[in-house]
Length: 453
Image (cartoon, rainbow, N blue to C red; front, side, top):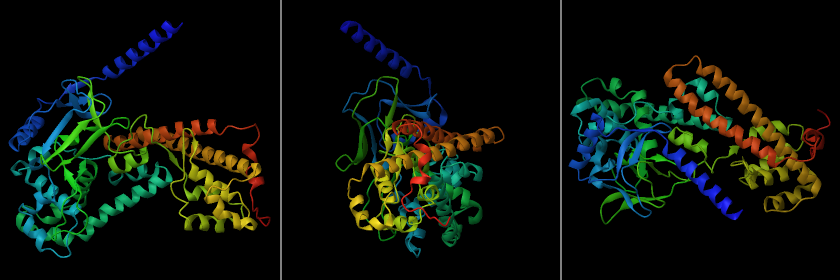
């Protein structure tokens, strides 16, 4: 029996490895844009790498290992001369305009303006080989159509609108500076540095830059931590991958070192950080499958709606807000987070027990009745969120049939987010499963029922 179990485990591993290796890929290294990119990088001191650009069936464009990469092996070493930073911008034709402008520009705006101007130059740009392989559009919320934004969960919807507004504000507040660049533009500044062009550049920097701290510069205002890294930015994210990534002050290169290794011909990945899927969607424009960091957020508005019969709700919400307990309330596949359950335990208390409110936030244990109320409320919240997810998926299904390719790509990102949300909520409800008949008792067991309602 022991030998059979060992054999079954080994067979399962082989089947899984076969499925993973079966992901189809097509090399892109012979395509002209990538030939030009590699020539551009080699001219700037980039040497060989065990990776090549490829198109993968599951992730799209990425980097493929030409040979097995061992744990601890240096995968990529990109010289400083290949990085596009604010130093690049300030030493370019834009430098004199940026240095003389008041108020000073932020590093982000400086990089965005440089990208737009370089794209405007076309093949005459020194950075054309890099500009040419950047995406023409992105699936970040700044690009989302109104119908796509409306299909997002409420918290993500709010942050998506904030992102869109932030990009619009950057554009509108820098129009005078844009117009000051007319002497170096072949077309009117208002036609080159448009909102759409700035949005493209902003998303390029926001989704593709690596963290690299630079010395403060009196010509710019704010923290300077951006570096665009050609070729390196083709590496895709996978939440279970570990790498070491940083700028090496000795070699003057940005280096990626593998922790786990990559088999030959498989896609090489990096890890953008321990982000949940909402964060990945907002910052990078995609949702990673099988993300162990994924959660569903419970917004304060939903809490207030579910508990609207509680006459003391306003005071409790105010108390939670003052104690920084109204944000990051989540549920995962394993159940509600500690923060959410703590908030619900406080909400279970009547105003007459105000003296216990602070103690609850510090972990005070309550009686079984109030603990049961908190669990039932968590279940009700999950049920409401699950209803919203299903309704959103139905809406997305209808929109997919009558939208153009650009909007369909955006919808697929939100669809992935909602599908993941549905799975998490279903698992959470199973974890919260209690004796039959409890889920309908919530409203009759609220702590401070307003009898006048």
